Structures are given as C-alpha cells and as structure tokens.
Image (tube, rainbow, N blue to C red; front, side, top):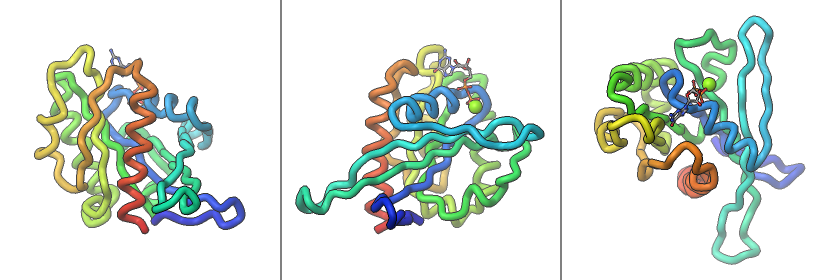
Length: 187
Ligand SMILES: Nc1nc2c(ncn2[C@@H]2O[C@H](COP(=O)(O)OP(=O)(O)O)[C@@H](O)[C@H]2O)c(=O)[nH]1
Ligand SMILES: [Mg+2]
C-alpha cells in the first residue's frame, strides 16, 4: 500500500525484486542505487540484504499536482537464504519486479522460483500486484520474456523489459514508467 511520508511530502512505493539465483538481481538493484541511493542492512548471521531507493515524480493533471515519489526496492532471495524479514517483506507491497533468466538450462529454476515466491507471499497478494518482468542474461541466453509471460501467472504484467545488462539508464527509466503503473493502482 503506497504510503505518504507527510513530513517530507513523498509518496513511498514498496517493491520486491525477485528471481532465481544469479539472474542479475543485485546488478540491477545496484543500477537503481547509483541513480538514487542504496542501503545494506541485515545481520551477520544472515548476511547482507540490499535495497535501493529511486526517486521519481508522478504526473498530475497540471504541473502543480506533480508529487515526489520514492520507489523502495528490496531484493528477495527466496529459498537461497534464510530471511528474517520473512512475510514482513510482503506487507504493504505495491509491486513486484521479477527477473527471468534467458539461459535455457535455467528455465526450470526461473519457473520454480516464481512458484516459491507465490507461495511465500500468498497467491492473493501476488495476484493484485502490477508486475514488471525483466529478462536477465539477454547476452548469453536464447529464451525471451514471451516464453514466460503466460507461464508465470499471478500479477498483471506490464510490457516485459529486454535490455542488455549494461543499459542502466534504460532499466532505470523502465522502473520509473512502472512506478506510474503502480500509482494508478494505489491511488
Ligand atoms: N553475461 C551476463 N552475466 C550476468 C548478467 N546478469 C548478471 N550477470 C552476472 O551473474 C552474476 C550474478 O549476478 P547477481 O546480480 O549477483 O545475481 P543475483 O543472484 O540475481 O543477485 C554476476 O557475476 C553478474 O555479473 C547478464 O545479463 N549477462
Ligand atoms: Mg543477489
């Protein structure tokens, strides 16, 4: 649920970034963090957890209605790592960025990881989220996101993003556009 930070007059959106191991989640998160800001938290027992905050603006009917928006993105590892945040991570969630792996030998992994996510977060929660699908390993994989769109059922997917890993600007822009889609639902 988007919430308003009254003190700073900022609308905050909470997003989980998920996907199978080594699909490029941390790389993409770092790109958001470079454009905005990032933080590492967590305990020594669990290892570092990462998040990034991307600032953007939401358009209103006139320039005066524009408001500041912050997209908080949290990486979720799934069964890879124990996670103290557990279900807390999914409370008040506004969106899901799911990375699919373009490598054929990771196809099953990509699908199973998504199923685990749906189970962990709760099917009804995932179903009401706008989702952004991002293709990882475009350079060394042959699968394209079209392969996954009908397979990964739950969220209402925006047009999938297929960009080379080094196109950070393109990815940041895609997340900004996605923020508009989340706001359209949240407000
Ligand atoms: N060739 C290639 N390597 C990638 C791509 N995305 C990530 N990697 C590499 O895969 C490894 C794991 O990436 P990381 O972002 O940590 O994956 P995560 O486990 O999903 O967080 C790193 O060495 C990345 O540089 C990609 O699109 N193409
Ligand atoms: Mg990672």
